[in-house]
Image 1: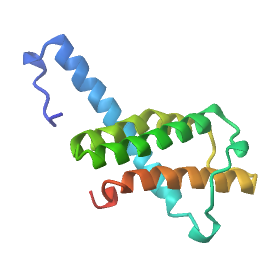
Image 2: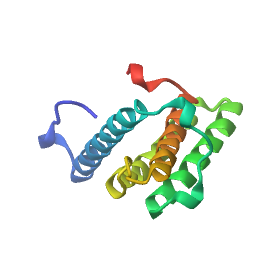
Image 3: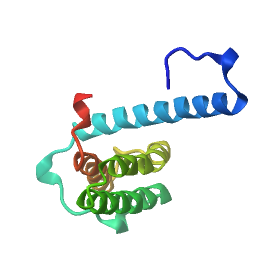
Image 4: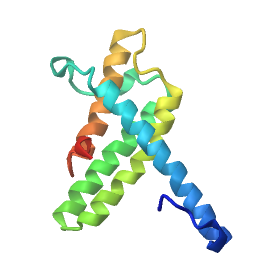
Length: 137
């Protein structure tokens, strides 16, 4: 995606693709910023296993399932030395992460639910870190 769109010389399909990419990139950036904000609040001593019985919203269930699948895909692709495909697998986290942030309050009143949501976000972070530390970008 370029910063200057040459709309006059673009087909309708090219323009639609460009606009869709812009929207996706915006969602990705907002999700990353939210994740970084909440992950700064994580006290590593309070982390443990994610407790699926504490999920209150379908978005939590879906994000958990997707992050587990993406992590598995990355391990498999990296073992096969398919690095580009491994990076592309991260894209599968964009929509579930956006829906998660739209659907739940991470800092829930119930401390157990809050900690569980923080653990879920830590799992997302760790999945990204399987390939690179994106905080330096």
